[in-house]
Image (cartoon, rainbow, N blue to C red; front, side, top):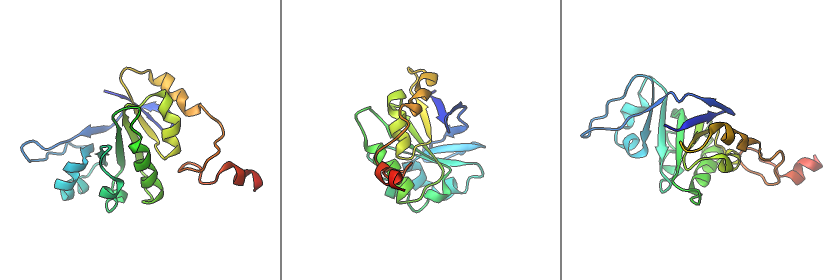
Length: 165
């Protein structure tokens, strides 16, 4: 099970993955994480769950697919199947900027020290660190740089505008 970094600290993940068996979805007590397909097929049941609820999006699925329910979700997890697959960055940016998502935005999959800073720039605030990587070392990736030039989800003004203000 991957180690979770959230808000700059190593924490325990409270979410349980729940998926239907033979078309029947049984949600455990507490916080649940379902796939986009499960959310779409069992929308009322998932959104009516008493605990916190989250959805996991694959790289070929779009932020638009959850735009109408994004404010009812406590967690959106975005998969990074490989280091070279950057589609999750766009998904995160759109969720934060276009759809105004304020909940936990978690990077999952091929997530490690070298990706954390850039993922945080587009809006991720939680990271499921790969099992083969040291979470303490990965945590330092959030501190790789102290100043950024370009605007993004975490800093809407570019450096030249901040300097002239």
